[in-house]
Image 1: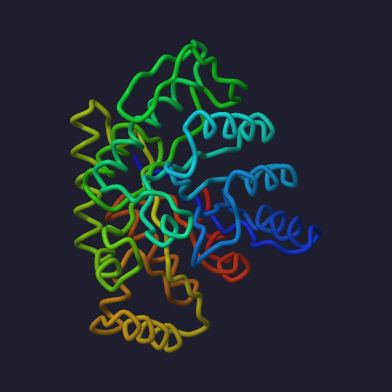
Image 2: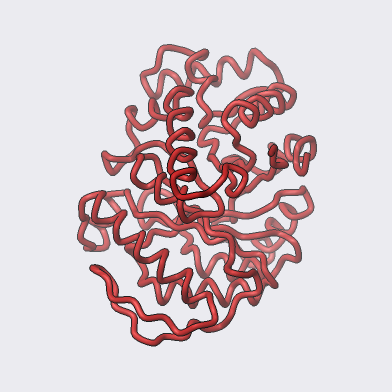
Amino acid sequence: MTRPFRFMGPVPEPQPKGRWQDALRRMEDLGFSSARVVDHFTETSALEPITAMTAAVAVTRRLRVVSLVACNDYRHPVMTHRMAAFIDVLSEGRLELGLGAGWMRSDYDAAGIGYDTAAVRIARLGEAVSVIKRLFGDAPVDHHGEHYRISGLNGLPKPVQRPHPPLLIGGGGRRILSLAAREADIVGINANMRAGAVTSEAAADLGPDSIAEKVLWVREAALAAGRQPDSYELQISCFVTNVTKTTEAARQALEGVAGYFGMSGADEVATSPGVLVGTVEQCVETLQERRERYGFSYFDLRADPETTAPIVARLSGT
């Protein structure tokens, strides 16, 4: 089954209310499927995902919202469910709930949150996913696990999307991707962030062979859990997105990325599914090739939506 293309763009950073609303409505008019917000205290965004998504659905009509991804360690799953359920009701079913185990060490250090091993963080996320899914259901939830204790809690409000809003789980290691394969409606493929920071090693882990291996891990874990590949959607972020006017400008941009990450050259960078650089025609062909090779249909375009709008117009829904 070949899924149609979908695209997400960024929820705008804080700015005067009217401009912020206009930017979201413009993204909606341009044909983006969703607006996404990341979840970090340091180095990146000034947005908090739950409040940002709530505000975004209040000023749009069709645009979906997605947390890419909300860190499980920053919120108790009971609160994550309650906030997510309200957004789903408020938006009349436009929420995609993205969850992750957490990885950015500077966030944990800045907030004074204990940075457990990856195994512990992923196990905790697994428990949280179980709790959240059941809270979206109709029966009261009892859960007595290693990390959470829930007793007779009826999750309210009940969501519009049933059995629950689409769940996106993202990550780059085999353990987290296996969890995603078992539990998620959307599986986000990322680099392995074992270092707790963006490094050249992480950039290299977005190479074509690494991504192909990650997709295989997902497929194997899904099949082992009795799920077929058409039961989940594959998503990836184009961390470097640059739509150029000419092929020569594209090559120069790729050389710059290669130099920054200490890679061999433009050709190596261009093959990374985490990079999308080229003219509109080149980018369209590249995305079509990546859907064919890896199965990706849902792309996070990390650039000004106005610059990527021609790509969205060409491919969205096809």
